[in-house]
Amino acid sequence: MSGHGKAEVISLGCRLNIAESETIRSLLAGEDADGIVVVNSCAVTAEAVRQTRQAIRRARRQRPDARLLVTGCAADIERDQIAAMPEVDGLVANAAKLDARAWNVPARARPAPPQRTRAFIAVQNGCDHACTFCVIPQGRGPSRSLSMAKVLGEVELHLAQGAPEVVLTGVDVTSWGQDLPGSPTLGTLVQAVLDAFPQLARLRMSSLDGVEIDPQMFELFASEARLMPHLHLSLQSGDDLVLKRMKRRHSRADAVRLVQALRARRPGLAVGADLIAGFPTEDAAMHARNLSAIAELGIVHGHIFPYSARPGTPAARMPQLDRTVIRARAGELREEAARVRESWLRAQIGRPLSVLAERDGTGHAENFARVAVPAGTPPGTIVKITPRQVQAGILI
Image (cartoon, rainbow, N blue to C red):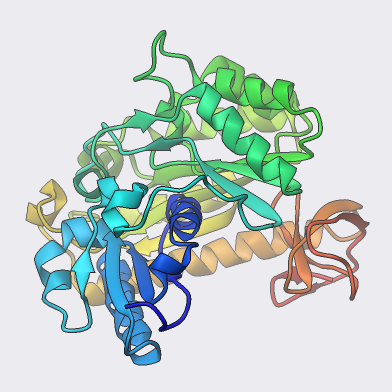
């Protein structure tokens, strides 16, 4: 169905999907892929599936003549429901989406990645843990690591395109290396990237499982200036009984100890975390402990998810909370996260920050605070800015 416009890839969900969408775009760069629209879907929550369906309908309205294909986690986990949508022409299994044959296009040498201010590199995929709320292993399979040589090759490709910042991402990044010969640790990979590319200005990690941070990785976070002082924890709850029922492997005290130890070495460290509101069986006292973790850990980049039962997960069979209670608790967590974030942003006023300019007139400091950059600053340049005020969550 060529002649109906260039191939288009619509990406939903996590940073790993963003990285994979770049690869799919490069696979579909030739004329033989004209007229294809790909929705790279997400199924982490019921809301993510709803947004996926919305994106599919919108894509069909905008490109009525396109061949519309869906891949990603929703294409595996909600396979029958997505396949039944009249807008959808076909599904590509998540495990096959980076293979040219799945798209019926000839394999070609991978073109240089598009120039981005921040390059996402998927170093790991899948997950071996069985958290009771999580459907992602159904969509992504067991943990698989990209070899160190392949990671270094990807970094080199992006640096050649001028990317000033590289983000290492995956489903469970801290398990990187466990399936490789000799079981290298994530710390050895990060050290290898920093050693191989002295010209790399900024290296950032995506969400990490705190209990799996190896000693070398800890040391790099504590002392390596080119590794950004921004730790995003896959925390999920601040209550120990909820954590146990989620089958997480850490306690609240583990998270507190890790953050305190890192901040003692690197005082400017900014902490982000994923938190779930209204997990089954969560009572008011458990919710209060979840809420209090935000201030205790100083979570300034909070990702709050209202719990939603996912198909085939153990948590879906536990006693569920009323949706209105879940929504109210998510609202309280968001308010507290906004309050902690606002006072952290105000504490940045008067401090010189090193800011990587984006295309929208803002940029991100090393600690991932959003900062307005002077008009005309070319995207991808790193500028020194001393903010004077906070406006709508942005340092000005």
